[in-house]
Image 1 (cartoon, rainbow, N blue to C red):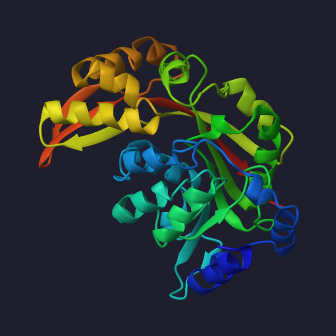
Image 2 (cartoon, rainbow, N blue to C red):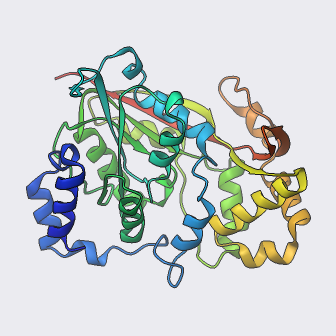
Amino acid sequence: MTVEQYLGHLADRHPGWHRLLDPGRVDGATTAHRLRAWTNEFDPDSGGRGDSHRRAHRDPLVRWTGARQLLRLAVPEARSGRGTQARSGGAAQALVLDALGGDGLLARASALRPDQVPDGLRLLTGDISGPMVAAALAHGLPAVRQAADRMLLADRTVDAVLLAYGTHHIPPAARPAAVAEAVRVLRPGGRVVLHDFEPHSPTADFFRTVVDPRAAIRHDYRHFSRIDLLDLFAPHPVAVRLVDVYDPITVRAATPDGAKAAVVAHFAATFGLADHLDDLGADAGWELLADAFDHTAHLAQLCGPLAAPARPFVRPAAGGWIAEVPRVALVAVAERRGG
C-alpha cells in the first residue's frame, strides 16, 4: 500500500485507532522516506527470516503462557470496569499498543482465548517490518508500521504499551528513545511493560552460543539487565517494578515423540536453525534444547521464588501432548504518574 491507501484502510476498518495517529508524525516519517529504508531480519527469507518465523507461529498460542501474564500486568484493572474510553455499550476499553507485535501474534492469540484476557482489551499491532505489518493487516487486525523509537501515535492515547518478544533487537543507542516514546503515548495511570531475557540467562545464552554462530542470520544482541531497565525509566514520570515471568514455548502434537519433534522444528524455523537442527535430527535436537534451557541454576539466583519447571519436558494435554521449553523473562512494569 501507499501511505494514503494505508490510512484509508485504517480509517475504514479501524476508525478508532486511525484517530489516534498523529498526522504530523505520519507526515514526517513519510516525507523523509524513512519507511522504505526500514529493513530488518524479519523481512522475507530471501534477505531475512520473516517467512519462516511466520510459519513457525501459525499456532499463535506457542507463547501464550507468558503473553497472557504480560497483558494482565499491562491492564490489571480493565476487568473490573476501570477504563479510559467507553465502548458504545458503555463498558470500559483498555487500548494497548503491542509495539513489537510482528504479524499480530499476540492479538491472534488473545482472540482465541478471550476468557483469559482483561475485559475490553483492544490491541494495536505495531512493527518496523513492512511484511510483518502487511501480514497483520491481512489477518484483519489493526496495525501500524512504525519504529519503536519513532512512534506515530499522538501523545497520551493508549492505556498500555508492550515492548516484548524482541526488545533486545532495538539497538542500544535507540533504547532510551523507545522508552521515552512508550511513556509519551501513555495516558496517566497507564503502563509500559518491557519484556526481555537477562544476560546469561539460559535463553540469552542459547541465542549467543547456538543461534548466533549457527543461524543463517546473526543474533548478536545485547540483552537488558535489571540495572539497564531501572536506568532507562529513571528520567520519566513513572513508578517502576521488576518481576520475573515464566514464559515457556509450548508446542502441541499427537504423540510425545511428535511433540518433541515439533518443538525442535519450531526453534529451527523461528531462529533460522533449520540446517543445523536438521543435521542433528529430532532426538539430538531435543537433547540440545533440554541442555540449553536447563534453568536449575537460574531459578536459584532469582530475587524471589518462581513456580517454574527447571528443564524442558513433555506432558499430556487434551487430544494429544505438549512439549514445553521453559524460559524465564525479566519484565519491567512502569506506571505513568498522573498529570
